Each structure stands twice: as structure tokens, then as C-alpha cells.
Length: 204
Image (cartoon, rainbow, N blue to C red; front, side, top):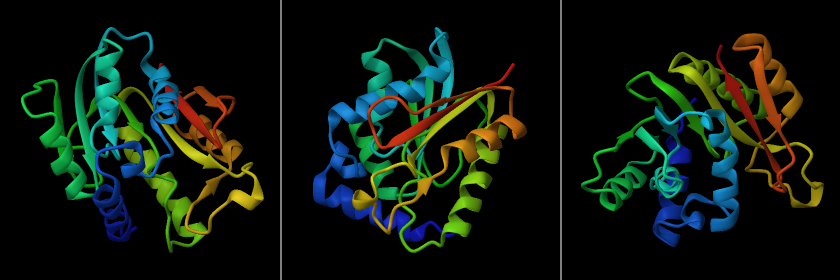
């Protein structure tokens, strides 16, 4: 999957809105925090851990971890070089975080999280984007020793609010994929008030 179009999309969002939830195409700070908190449930029992954040934007998840007092070795990865440049600017001098331009982490960590990277498919056909999601989950699994989590827009969204350039996934299908491919310890969260769901995969 060529993600150059997605990279340009987010680079434009950052230019238009700056380092803000709108700059990574979310509605606001409250929903962003709620979304992060669902993803971080995969490692809620851990005191110290390493985490890879795929699609990190300007590094807001690291800021949330800091606000929560969580001690972690954080790597943020994003396909938009402009996002990475902004993240490095905002977190200069902070030794617990590092940022990398690209699609994949350059290390294995305890956990991997991905927020929003499966939502904006732009012109990609459904079948190609679905394959891309599955391939990315395989990579996330291989790069995580304890577990990973991700979110997707849900196919149960209201029809009149759905956009053609966004991808609305089947939560049951992705739950089944993760359950049969990666671990018997899989949770599907679809009860936190947003038109999306979060999947947590915990390894034994």
C-alpha cells in the first residue's frame, strides 16, 4: 500500500490546524483523550514499559502518558515527515521519547498502539485497505512482546454521517482476525460513545 497520499493529507491538516487534535483530523481534545485511554488499557497494569506509537502525529499520546504519570520508553512513528518534525520540536530535550518518519517501528517493544491510522483511506478501494489493515496488524504483532491495540471507525456509524474517503471497519471481523491469529486474550471495546471501536490484544 502506497501511503504517500495519506502522508500529504495529514501534512495539510497540520499546516491548517497546527499541533492540535484537528491537526491530526480529530474533533477535539476530549475525544482524543478518551480514545487514548481506551488504547492504553492494553498496558494499564504495567508500571514501566516500552511502547511504539504508529501514526503518532505530533506526539500527543506521549503527552497523555506523561499526564497520567506513566513511565515508558516511547517511540512515535508517522508517515508524514512534517508531523515528525513537529513532534521533535515539541518534545526537544525529553529523553523518554523518540520519533521516526516512516510506516514501521525500528525496534520491538513491549506494546504497540495505533490510533486513527486505519480511518483515512482516501482513494484506496475497500479490499486493498482491508488487506492493508491486516498486514499492518501482523507487523504490530511481530513488533510487540506483550500486546498491542488499535482503533477503527465502525461500520455501525450512522449512514448519513459516513464519508467516502474514510473506512468503516467491521468490528466483529477484526476481533475474529486477532483472536484466531494473535492471542486468545482479545478485547473489543465498542461502548465509549464514539463512532469507533478499539481492539486490545494481550499476549500470554
